[in-house]
Image (cartoon, rainbow, N blue to C red; front, side, top):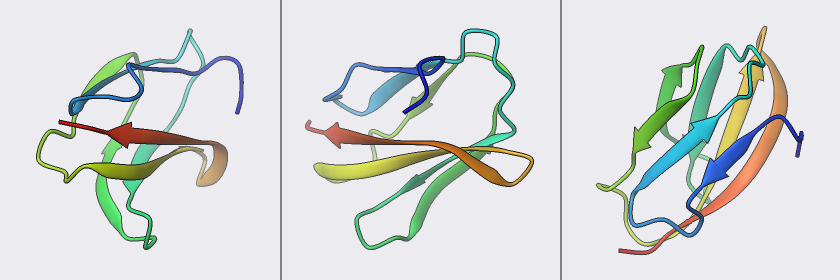
Length: 79
């Protein structure tokens, strides 16, 4: 993982904050453990993602810049 990204809280009850620390990312995508895209959004600044509709479990957050994977982070949703 790249040190410019901060995802918290992890584990989460469904809302996660993403701090980019001024790094420019084009988009973020959340995948389930089967590799299916659950949520995808463009991102330019720090954001809060609402993942509260997801079931408890592990998910992967992919960060893309110019369609290249910059970082992959594992998160846990636990309601």
